[in-house]
Amino acid sequence: MPRHDANEFTTSDLSEQEMYKLMIGSVVPRPIAWVSSKSKDGVLNLAPFSFFTVASRNPPTLLISIGPGVGEREGTVKDTLTNIREIGEYVINMVSEPLGEAMHRSSANVGPQKNEFELAGVTPKPCKSVDVPAVLEAPIAFELKLDRIIPVGGDHLVLGIVERVQLDSAAYAGNYKTAVDSWKPLANLAGDFARLTSAFPLGPGNR
Image 1 (cartoon, rainbow, N blue to C red):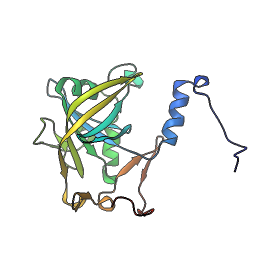
Image 2 (cartoon, one colour):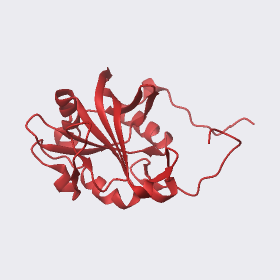
Image 3 (cartoon, rainbow, N blue to C red):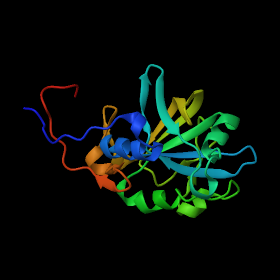
């Protein structure tokens, strides 16, 4: 049935911010990659990114998109990107509902010498496959080694190969499945956040 009241926009007629608002309000909900990294001087960094997905199953590869600094640090390179470039290792921690406030605190614009684990009030947990800590309180953490960084406009796609996966007991359902209802993932909307409702199947699918 025709949508006579549809709104349509041509990209060339919009500012970057206007198009950005349309995209982040439409491509929802988005998972949050809470990325821990370390500078070459050993300063820990922790920052959330919601341009995040699986890029490949073999080799197991996760993708995050990192944009330029904003606010007081507008136009600068984010510390996470600098650290990943220089060290080549990082961790993607998954954010559960109880960690929402801590994750939000870590999104503040602070200088590169600020330890954002302390800012967020969470605990560094040593990893086995990379020399960067995970977030102890996170239900799931992926230890990654950098595969490649691809510039796309003013952003950078960061592809990392998973070396090890950490799951706490509440997050693991056995048979290599996660207990989503137990670890309660937090999702990003357009400036707000959302929790998942009860899951339901649509046909046989891959279970």
